[in-house]
Image (tube, rainbow, N blue to C red):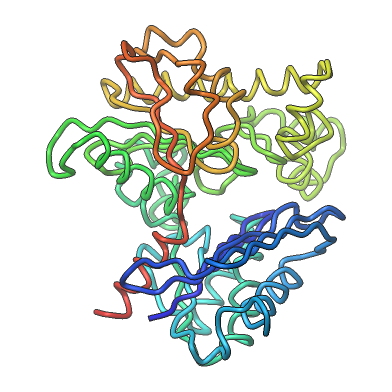
Length: 399
């Protein structure tokens, strides 16, 4: 069964064509920096590797470009869209409506649309991917896999907010959690690497997903028990354009004293804050380059980013009552040795001791970057949300 996986992020599209159940990746690639004049496109098969920099204004244009490449006479890997039996879509927010993978219907799309306000940078892009895929791969089953599903195991003591009870029982306001496919994939790989059996007690892991969106999960016995993102994907860590944790009083001050509208505050916290608000850049590669050239704003922003991650490592270690491993994953987590160094410095109390030379090694494989004496394993595990989505799509369609 050939399955196309579409992972539409806030500023990127990752895609793979996978032959199941062999998990054979026929084609893969991504488009990042969507919305900029310098968007990057990659397209990789067993015989071809294309890289191109071009302006891609939005997700629709990006997805159409990907589809053309898949069916291109020279570099394409399919002759007809009829070869595709299913398209698996990453959808960020499933709210209380979705706790499992589902076949997409008009009703499902309506519910995804109703959740736009809770994930304004993601659900609209996810739905756009679905709509375009329905046009291009019109004979394939369209399937949605939700980021929030993995975090359904978070206990009530952690997922309930200290607000009036009816807001949970009637309005379903609670911690939902995000990046679930990534946290699930890398944690299962970590458990296997550490030779844990998921049914046994004792696997205490913190997964650190760092990209344009960022989150951390406390995982015990293979299950999510706490997570930095909550009702929507904007609190917790400092992100590319999102503020992360902010005192609620700041919002009231902006509205009541400084005269901001609620819409303006929402736009500020979602699209104008985080690393962009601190430095003028949203891409960590630009921020690191400027920091190395002496830009004080960029240096401080990187330090703040690492400081926030350290705080959550401390709190999650307390929740887990111990720590076997921390895992860095996603674009920044996998590729930024600088961020990993900042996070792991002066963390020996937690048994976290970084090997500086190992930290500089680049690899597509699971790797340890801790010293031999480090009590806690420091792992870099390349995430593969697309493989995880493909597995869930295949399982749904075969049952």
